[in-house]
Image (cartoon, rainbow, N blue to C red; front, side, top):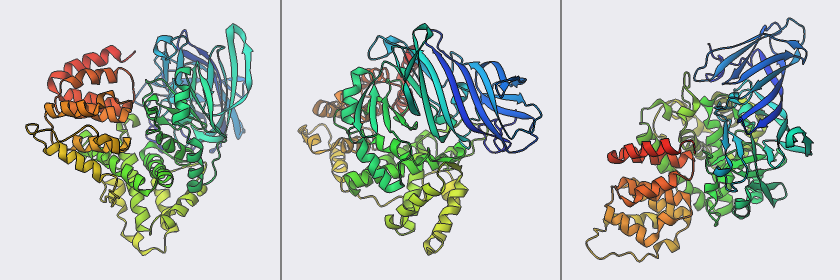
Length: 592
């Protein structure tokens, strides 16, 4: 079962035949938790005498395959592996340079691309809900495809779903829903811009929307829509700032869907429809800057895409770097530096504790042969990648030189998928006249494990007050009178509170008595900001503060966001006597 020579995570062979258009005709069945219908791929021959079409599938029940909607084709599905299965389709001997293959199929109830929620699992408690997640290689369990980010194509879709529910996709809606048999409605969508398969996404539920800008709506269940509209009210400002940095926004609309808490990510940059976690909703917009990250993806990832997930830093490193540029223009350079410095601690923990300084997954360009990309997922491509770009900017003379280069880069490679060598060559050609470029150690940055060989000189003006307060807490011996009044947090922004807690977490273990006093004064365990609550829980677990255990399980029972869930389960497992309790709890709630 050889994988593609170009992509270690795909069986498809786009160097022989390549998808130029995808059409999906779906019927969504909530009772059986399946999606059934037809995936029609329009393909172009790169090699004229290619006898086989090879596609990626995973747990799909295929009933028939037709050539140009007429001729039945023979096919085989190989055994399942870490990348799903290879679908081999025998093609007729023709002189056609372009043709269609229509595959009738049904998804598995265990499809890893789909999350089905019962009415009880939603906020409204009246209707079911389903949404998809395609990144990294999950959409091959939603439809047969060349599931490599090297393959980009436009798509259209027709989706039949219960009439009481709203259907949304990573595409532009066409017309109004039309009545169908069985109490269902037909919804049509069109994504004219070529995208990789992992960006095909949909969601169906009892959804409402509110306009937050001339090209943006927020969508969610009714219970959260007003809160989402408030927290994401700066969306248009972020879009305009991103356009100043990156060039025109080509996707038409930019909508945001706030998903149920089981969504595993902070956000997912599906074109035209960003998926967002409800953990961003704080009532004070303090976590809304995640939307700047997803907006940046409109250029970094969606428009210019890594051609395999070994080059994922071309998506996420560029996105983090651009996100913080947006933040710097909106909030000031000190805020950009402060945010980058805060996340540097996460990078250190990932390198030194989650992996190790010599672990191959800490390379900026890892080898993913034989590896599910999700198993290698971490903060590395995000933070190490953005740090590399920070370094390159300083090397070539600063933002005045580097920002025009980035805009030119996005224009040059728009609608394409590239690898790191392509970026490197373009960079070197653009800055050929800059002597300092010759000092860049590309091999260490790209191919050596561990922390970056360079740390930016961050503006620490916003961090110093956090560090000072954290130091005071660390040196207080709890025997002498408590020097803290409880008002210290009033002068700090929510992000500064995170830095305060992150500094304590990175420092020596604190006594349970000290953590008890900390929470009594500041009430972190009652915080509506999940970032703050998360750090407080981790600090309590590190200090073996017993009241934090119940609070941690309560928190884990409300969400599935990986950024929070994975570290907390690791921390519980590290507290020996709580390990079995954590395992039992996970098994109880994993399907809830």
